[in-house]
Length: 96
Length: 485
Image (tube, rainbow over all chains, first blue to last red; front, side, top):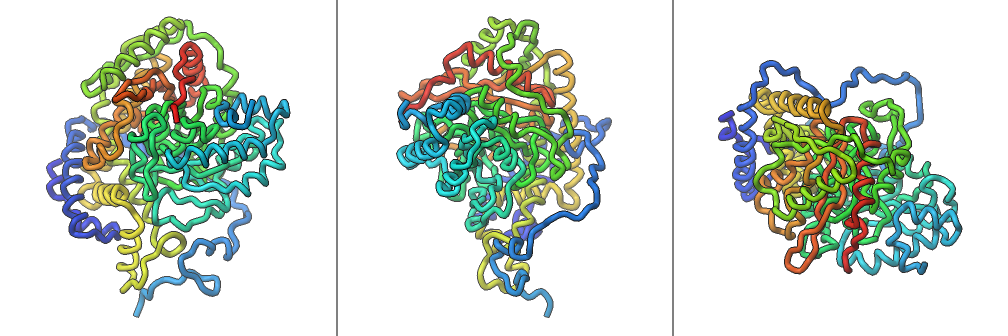
């Protein structure tokens, strides 16, 4: 896993929709580079015979009855919205 | 008993006094509020509390219920209807929870009164509560030191007698480690034992809610209320829930407790090591046999954790988009600018670091090398525990390799902070249960700093864990010590 040198914090921050200052970018590049160098130790482990586990408890296909039940009213759902009008969330203009 | 003595009571003793009508739930809350007013300016354990709402509940409390009239402090990552739920983040500064988490519904059903939201590392990311976007919390045993984290507010509140008991969450040790550093009992149930519905998600395959308490019996009482299947959380298991107080008091003869060879490593503070050695002798004198076992993939656990936890966090925290709730940047040029600045302004440094790391290990070209490989090594870690628990009933270790460290001491080097989680994170990766119980003190600079003994049990073995912790606790005086404030 020599890829750690390939981490481009500025590019990944764009993927993560996160604006960073130049100082943050430089600091995280160094700190996360250290973390990636550390986690490179995983390449020492032979995993060729291992099935992946998404989580530690083997439960699958948990379904419930498809029945109507109470949910939020529009007022309740909008109560924490930073901007709203006429029972709608207001968002920046997306299409010209 | 004067009202000034009230806050020092355990939940069990408080309940007994309430049932004998020596005090009323209203008097309990007023005594607690007075204690918080006197002590919390030094500790900063609480982010908010709503005394009026709690007093209203107190006046209708049914003290015959298992937790009737008992106020319980709640980590500010768990939703209590109508109360703030900030996750100690600026991005949720003005958020009010629209509904009760299942654990809150269950606490109320048992008669408890959720009272006060406690400080934490932002979105539970950290081991010191210094990553709180609001304020740091101070360790009641030495105000210059951290209480541990991420449930540091809950741990400090219980340790300083500002709470009878508290809820925390544990993703990689965030209940057990602050319990150890603050000198209280912290229990992380097995994954799936307690519902996560209404708990703001950090790493969904690792998060579990659990109690922080003054005694092991209180931990059992709270787990009785919290445990059980929830149809609203598809990862909560439909298993019978025993009465966790039933096994308390049984002796330990015939029990085998494993000591993982890989945990005898450098980096453990000598006073911590000698406290754990003494705890092992104590457990032997109670009838348990101490056996050396092996967990061969121990050295990989921190690396696996910081890939899986950050990957899940980067996905979970995508919901903070400034549209439906939370902070929103002003005057966005376009949608991308709206997202990027909303999140830049709302999240603190550690959260940003982890979102970037998690996004990177999931990104095209790196997924197999990091995330998929980490999932496979996680399975090997889980199998290590399965093999160990074929030979022994429980495992023991320090909870943290060191006592509480100084505020600011580890903030510059995130990797060093991560490495201190070595003894706690494997339990989350394997989905097993674990508990920290006080086992001694380190004397440092004229202060006494608590040390925690960690006990780990197989999935669903909480009753055995509590039985052993209780026997140990009752045979020592460590849990009776209180910080001088």
